[in-house]
Length: 411
Image 1: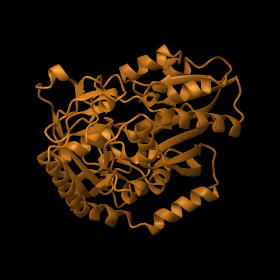
Image 2: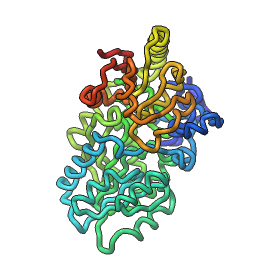
Image 3: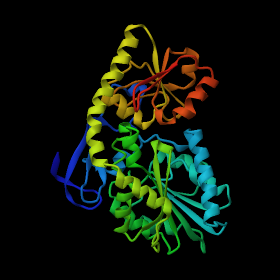
Image 4: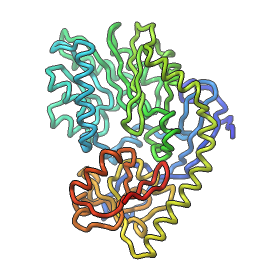
């Protein structure tokens, strides 16, 4: 359905199409302490829309950054060993590819707990993080990462430049999974270019819309992710700010991401970038998003029926992990603690809390190995190949449930 009232966050065009309505949902990171569980929570509309002019998928309701990433924001990159390794390897690759040295500076906007920057710092390169989410920024600072503790926006470039060592070259500006988060993306990119010199490379990572479609990643839609990029829409958005993407590649992390390298002086496109654009041209993105509605209804029925049957048979079901996507999935499906007793987690900021909306308790992951529930629901299902063997090695004896892309029980 076309809604003429919605203005595109990227190109300012009007008349966006509503393609996937997930109803009203709480902020997916608003994990309240368990003793505060009865406190009311605010629910906001969560509907994915598509702009037919610039091809940008986006939410119809944009929350201010200060609300979406306030003190309730508890995501920590460093709570995942696989992500620590990924960012360590990527830092080494970028350092070698761009011949980074001790005189260079790497700036990361939305640096979270400093995991990526620490990898550069360990290589002897100057780093500077920018993040207004207090809990994660404090953790980064405790690791020795120099921080600008504020949300990036208009006027931020001047503040950041004052903290760059004298004579140091800004070699890289990193924006890892942050372009979807900022409330005013054009203002964000305008300010970001003020940090760049002609040869500075901006490296961004964004959840790839094609992967979202192909892997049925509806649970990666939440208020903190306000936009969902294809390389096509990303290229058009960047061009408005004289940022030219010269190279792009896809990765498996976060359910499938596109890593883009852009320069103010760039003019060429790598063969890898052209291949991704070709895949997007051959994918009917808008129709695929429309079709997700029917599949989603079918999956919800199968998932709920499975949990109800297990409950009626006296089986115990617990969850593995409390990622942001867990909130979208559990709230949309209506899964409360009568069906899933608790979620096991390693992020200390979430242990002792309850999942937003549905109020499923979050406990330490060790509880799952001690109690050995009959079934373990893997909510970080996109990391199944990595996590399932780990849980078997640590002694979990029950069965696994994968909720996405299809409901599946693994012996």
